[in-house]
Image (cartoon, rainbow, N blue to C red):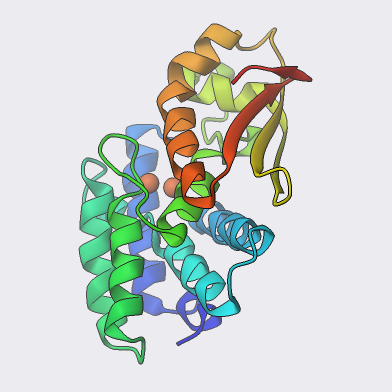
Length: 218
Ligand SMILES: [Fe+2]
Ligand SMILES: [Fe+2]
């Protein structure tokens, strides 16, 4: 099974439609296929930068695209629910048991509440997911309805993730409009996610850095 096949999988797409309706009702930022395709792409870029094989890159793309399907069950524990749903879907494919379990385990461990990176696929998924901060993730149209997550995402006008194989460093560059959100607010929301990225980067023997408006923050 290839990444292109899972992009067309009717069950996965149905989970995202349902999950998006639930998160819309909860007032969350975008967790649709726009987010998950971006995560798949970034996870692949990370593994490519650290010279992993095309086979492992493909597994990270599949995990990246499927990682948030659990939102269709419940936001709470969505990583674990998503892993079990993904397992059912992937059992019907020609993936080996070991590849399937690697994907399922990466999905189950992507949430900052209790997840951990134990291999390069899980690490790439975590870093790709936690660094998806951008203005167009905000779904509320009226700024009066913005919560702090919306305001922080709305304040980020440019995002770039750079992986340096030689210098063993992964850097997230953000341009933040500090008129909209202060660095205190940003760190209040994102510090645990950045800490998770920093732990995940160790899988690549790399350091994770955060630069905001040209200044090194972490
Ligand atoms: Fe998630
Ligand atoms: Fe996500």
